[in-house]
Length: 416
Image: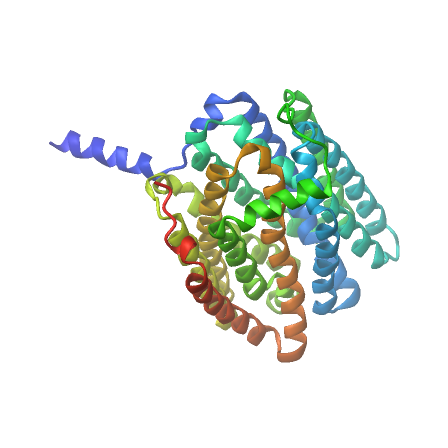
């Protein structure tokens, strides 16, 4: 009897842990995971280094938020082109080419940071250009996954992709804070450049992933076809809206440099950026249960509201440990929402439209944080850092409740 209980306990734990089956079974998926994971780790170093330098040079949280606004404008200008290209060309080659361009951007940031008197404007320009290039790359990257794994493995593949994202979001900011504090900003950008080189090697080892035989070239009509399909699926519109509003109201990362200066400097800045990813890592490491969950819409809504509530706790916290704890809970909630959103998208969108719909998804989950950074920076300049964070988290919870009422098809969505 004891042995049976032990076996049952082990089976129960295996049911909770991350399903690595797609990695064991699909070599091409392995290479994609390696490429994106290494590249993303380096990008997260730059993600911390750019706002740190802008705040260091200007002493303005508003300017840090405006970097996000520039990135958003550039992202919107290329996102839908990226989606159309992803459905019309070899997706691997598209990712490979854009990765090389972003490596050049990292080299330019390292060059500017190494000047005796660094200038602020190159950080705005290069950050914007890289956001535009990333918007071309990301739909192809997202659309690659359904081509590399079986349909029944979509949830597990989404969790694996999310898990490596969280590892990068934890390690990248932590390493960024350490490098900036000890070796200096130029070294941080050079490390990012090195990760791009490793990523390109893994991408070059992958086989071609050509578009469907009947795929037409990118055009405005093809982009509009993607919009028309999205409009025909109100549960999809609901997922985009939920994520956009949650991040717009509840994304206070533009305020992290100001908070870090209050708590102790660059080392604390890395901790603040990494904390949400610790929560996300815990969520994905125990994501085995998501395979048995079928009411994806309710899970998305509940997780997004939990994100907002945790941001309120973060804004009210005075000791550093409680602020970090609030960010950890927020990150876990956001990751659960992300796993179910990705699964819903990948299971229900046809491959012929996957790239174009991925561009719509990109706008929804990228525009929210970038607009949220600008919003939080502006709010902080008016009412202060703490009140801006608390108000944003509360508005996030309210907006999710409104979405639950406005999108009944999302609330009732069941993958069965």
